[in-house]
Length: 355
View (cartoon, rainbow, N blue to C red):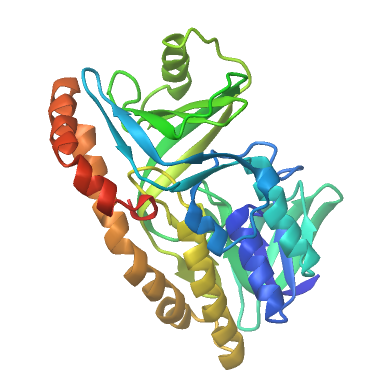
């Protein structure tokens, strides 16, 4: 089967890029290892900037958020803005909605399928995939890795990077919660290497945390739930990576979590992925105009551009994350007491999309 573009991963990054590329008249095939998109989705707390990229229907919005309460062992402080800063989105609905925009625009989709190998030639890139009907070979001008933190495309094409990983886990409970604040918990005894959270979802509450991969995130999650007198029921787990990743190769590029286009402080990446999807679509359009799919061309038109825009913010987030990871409970108390003194400045200047 021949396509202009093969995209591995039908999450929001891959699906939205597929939609953009179809609008340019390119043929696109989306492949995802999942049998059902959105069944096991990540958390859905997005800044209101998401409405710049997607027509979010009211049925997807579970709550609106004005700020957060930060907790350490012995201190807490609240940051709250006058207007809503974020939307709590039903993430499975959102993921299926973004995929539908891609397929409605003419992108083809193969689910329950995964890449087994790929290699580049002068004319194309040949990708072997395993589908429910057996193995197939796909030829395309370009392959896009949008396949998450554990990207097979990244590994298969040996794209180098310096990445940090945490394991995230979350669950939902039928506890009515219409608060305008998310709750964030920082302690090496609660979530070593990251943090824990609760998100008010109107008719329900999301509980979650992430830990450095050296720790048993499931055990820490069970412990976290106990403070709310909850027992673990159904849960969703997923890895998160952040750092500095090579995102191009000959006839290939990465986007979204696969490219570590993620905020190290919070682990979110939906807005970063959309910023990069816009840059990628322009770069790919130019590559087809010039018939140039070399590593050098893609670096100049894609990787250099997105890193110039986002890497300073990612590096800042990495710096803050590295500092927090060195602090014990007493030191975290002191650090957040200092932040409390800057509460007014944080409320006036803070931007959740760039930290």
